Length: 109
Image: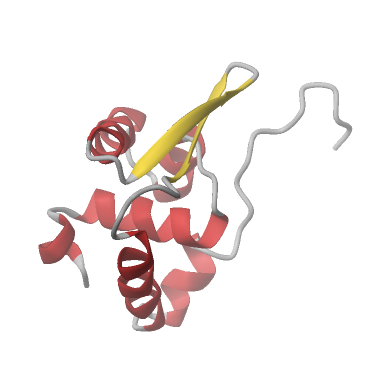
């Protein structure tokens, strides 16, 4: 839907996931979307180089979130939220209603 604006479908999915989950990590997104992790990492790197997202380390996992200092963050998030409203309900249930985050190593199932 917003693919022409963002450049490709992968970055669109990454931005939608950032809006829904607040923090994401490449391996989790790759599993969720069925996309090679390299493609996700490339898009996150592109977004980070542009100042749209920032990364932080949580143990050995690099987490990404929106950069609160990005000057157009409010407008970008408004556009993303509007795009999410027009996604098919089936796609929302499949991709954006699950919680994706690293599992603590010693946590019981």
